[in-house]
Image (cartoon, rainbow, N blue to C red; front, side):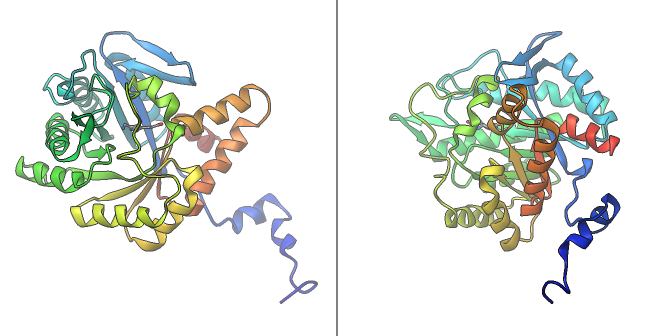
Length: 325
Ligand code: PBG
């Protein structure tokens, strides 16, 4: 049927008609709220390039998480900022490490909340790389052993899901094996399956103090020019035992989200990263864009592309917007 018989504007005439035919919906159940946790007490330190995002000590994190839980948020993702770093990132898996303490405290207070932990070395290594350095290069297979130790230590502390973000080959399989051997077959893996080597991570590296001291991450994170490779990465992760796949960043990679949605029958998460957050905040601050509307549009586009879950620093704000309707 063509014009004048078919008139698409008929279904755009009133808000209720538009609501009736809306194809994509955003819910508080889609949101995962990321937090940066540091040592100390009563710390709430704003990240310069991420207004209204903070580094929290555990006590203050609990208060912030309480707000998130009261808003209906069901899951959080934790990043640790340790006091001590070394060559091999050993503070990432000590019993009294920052994440291990945080997970325990959070689970004690909010047993129902889904606690996801980022599993990586870059916040814990003195050189800032996501792996062990051998002969000036990030060594894949020795890094796997470290990642397995980190994942098991998070599971021991009470994490529900571990999320490896290092991009070493074979890490999902090695972590799955280590979790199972340690009796944590119920702990799930949300894999950063398709993680690009992106300049959009800039503000995060300030927040987590995790910028590499030499070189860059191109030898392990994916080339932004590649999409077929994304399928190979996701396929490997599924074969190795991933429970949830993730694409990161989100908005510049909507085609990849769509591809994974079409290709794989697995829960799919997308990470709206620090640079995506900073861009929206900066433009809004200048008065150039409407923050609320840009935020809603960016998240709905990520869902429309096929993501089930969205990791976003805006999680609390979105939850508030959704409550208001
Ligand atoms: C750690 C990690 C990074 C992010 C999540 N986990 C940084 C990086 O790879 O350098 C980025 C998240 C963000 O930018 O919001 N490997």
